[in-house]
Every structure is written in C-alpha cells, then in structure tokens.
Length: 296
Image 1 (cartoon, rainbow, N blue to C red):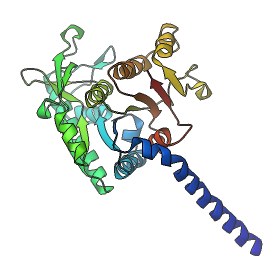
Image 2 (image 1 turned 60 degrees about the horizontal axis):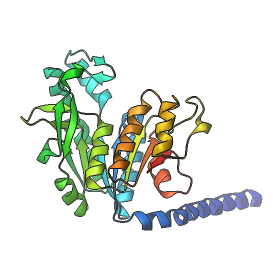
Image 3 (image 1 turned 90 degrees about the vertical axis):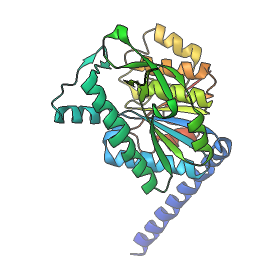
Image 4 (image 1 turned 60 degrees about the vertical axis):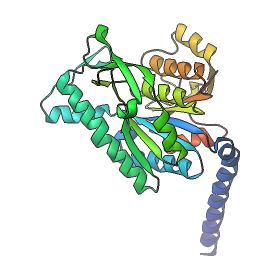
C-alpha cells in the first residue's frame, strides 16, 4: 500500500515537473512573439473532428491571452459538400479546383461566411476569447479576379488585400476569423483558395508568421516515412526540392504560398499537421517544433 502511494506521488511529482519544464521552455518564445501577428490557416481533419477543433480553438485563445495576435483564415470544403448534397447540387472538381457555378457559389458563400465562420467565432468566445467573423468581401479585405481560363466558374485569383480592418481588430485584442470568399471589382463573390488567402493576408499584415494547418506532418523527403520530415528549409532548398520532385502534388501550392509570403516580408512560415494534438503550440513554443518551418 505504501509502495503504491509512493509511486502515485512520484508520478504526480514527475507530471508537475514536466508541466513546469514545458512552461520554462516556452517562456523565451512567448517573450519573442508578444505583440506579434500570426496568421493561421485552418482546415482539413482538424476542422472536421470536434475534439481536434476544440483543441485548436483553445490553443488559439491561449496564444491571444498571452499577448500574441492571431488571425484565423479558414476554408470548409467538407461542409460545403454536405450542403450541396442536401440541396441536390452535384459537387464537381477540375484540376483540383471546385467547379463553382452560380448555385454552387451561393452555397459556398452561405456555408463559409455563415455556418462555418460563425461556428468558429462561437467556439472562440466560449473558450474565453473575443472574435469577429468576416469574409474577404467585408471592407474589401480580399479582391480577386475570376479564373476564366480555368473554366471552373466563380473561382478567383487574389489581386489585392486591404488589411486595415484586420489591423484595427488585432490592435484592439480581437481575433479576426476570415472566410476565404473574395469579391471582384463588381462585387461578385468568388471562391478563393484558403491557403493563398491566408498567405496574402499574412503578407499584407507583415505578420511574424504564417502557419498552414494541413493533414500531413510537414515536408517529407519520403512521403511515406514521417522520419524524413524536414524541420527547416530555406527558399533555395525548397525550390530545389520542387525541381527534384521531392516536393510534389498538393504540397507544391502550399510551399509556393509560403515562399511568396517570405518574399513579401513575412519572417517565417510553417506547415504543420492539424491532426496532432496541440500542434500549433508545439510548433511555436518549443525548441524542436513538430512541422516544417520555411525561412528566407
């Protein structure tokens, strides 16, 4: 009985020591990033799984509480598909892009700017943060032009970002939550890639970091072996890996987004696995990190 009690006490003491060690390791990062803006692109499995979603939101609110200024940019493809199915509209894709005709664009705008966006705002506020839900059309945050040549309907390439409203919100302690819907010069809503939207917003804000939450551990030399993950890459190394075919498929547009951000003044970009618990905190506030950091 005494041995059991001693073991439990030892485990409790060890657990407390671990927690204190983690806080001690995080301190210099908290000091370095206090007052700095970080843009987080949120999507993938971390958005579909309720437990993962709550964890991401809690981590985001924690960062805000300790003085970091997060901006959350999101998509919501699976939720769009659910509502298209409910309305009897077939989801179609061409070269990886959602074919977005008029009725589909209506659903995209309704789901991203409404259901998904306000759901995230509610979770942030339930976790103790203060959030404001927006889409790219608000105050012309995101302007875009239609990708006519791609024949995918109302899908846009971002042409400009007006970050004035976002800057005001983060200055006042709010967490902006931005849905990846833009508008063209006539006000027509356009569906834009959430990674690119996050990257352009990060550049416009001259953010300290852009973090892309994905469904992969980071950039891997061997896509089937997580132990081959690159902890850090320069722009030159990244471009060489693309040329060599190491970075391929869906990872190419993500690293291109990161490289473009770095070229526009963002200090560092990160590709992390949103399926890993507390991946956001582990990447930002620990020595080892968990994903791949791209720097200039």
